[in-house]
Amino acid sequence: MSTQPKVALVVGAQGVIGRNLVDHLAALGDWDVIGLSRRGGESAGRVRHVRVDLLDRDDCAARLGELTDVTHIFYAAYQDRPTWAELVPPNLSMLVNVVDAVEPVAPGLRHVSLMQGYKVYGAHLGPFKTPARESDPHHMPPEFNVDQQNFLEERQKGSGWTWTAIRPSVVCGFALGNPMNLAMVIAVYGAISKELGLPLRFPGRPGAYDTLLEMTDAGLLARATVWAATDERCANQAFNVNNGDLFRWNDMWPKIAGFFDLEVAPPLPMSLDVVMADKGPLWNAMTERYGLEPHPYEDVSSWAFGDAVFSWDYDFFADGSKARRFGFHEYVDTEAMFLDILGDLRRRRIIP
Image (cartoon, rainbow, N blue to C red; front, side, top):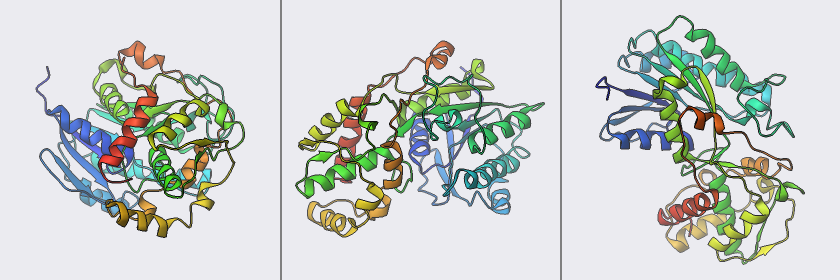
């Protein structure tokens, strides 16, 4: 085993991906971890957090310029914007700012891991080729994921470090205040449905109830991300990372309803962003009634993201066999994942 120190810089450490990555690295025991985020965090053990504005080049230079011992950058930050074109400048700038600040001062830098997703394949635009493969051609821009990868590919030439691009499906795990957290959407929607004495009704677009799709467990993603960053065979490669099974909401939805002891009613297309907008006072009352942790309603709801996922009336999955061919053989049962996450949220007193 290598005795060289390993220091991970996790960019976007408070998101659903970054939070689970920090926890996994800390549990391994042979990593020092530095988490970057706008909110910061509580440092403990071998994990310390740094609050930084990644869009501010000068702030990045000042706060990251002292991180001379970083060996691995795990980039999982994201800034949301109203349009696809508007997503490009901030998301590319944040990555560039981090690399520009760290690379010159960290002579031991060995790897940069870039978190992407199926947007690379145009999955967000409409029906796309399935199963999507890492070798598929890019689609018409704008697409910030592609621009980020192009930047790393060019920057890496002639350097002493390598890169990987990790492409998960919808990532499910524990995180609050995250704009893309389907697990929280389902948990809060189910809890409010139960509070109102309603059956659990699928709110998505007609057809979405019956299509094939897949998910990526945040813990599985963390393990795959670290594997790809530390296995030399994976250098300068992209990998799809998914649970390894497929499902349809028409089969999964009744099982989720069962967790809440709810009946299932026929699907009814509705925008969660609209119909759940007035539920803040109800949530506050539920928080007090059931002794829940006092999190603001906006921190436990990602309704626009739920609307996006539940609108996919086309198959949504990718080929994960490349990662297996390169040596990563883990998988997660998606039904068990959903039920485990919901149970964890209940134990944490996030939902009743």
